[in-house]
Image (tube, rainbow, N blue to C red; front, side):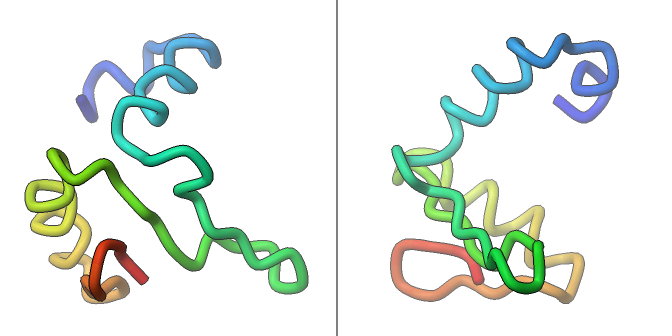
Length: 66
């Protein structure tokens, strides 16, 4: 997915994110202007958590990543 992301159109990127996250699954802090949480679809949570947690900036809590 990483390799194809750079070549994807904005519409294709939207579709990819839509397949990974629940509706309203992107938690954005308007004041700081950063993404602070992700609520992925249950089927992708384990693999997404594995990849994101390795950055040391995210942790899994309940049904999401914060």
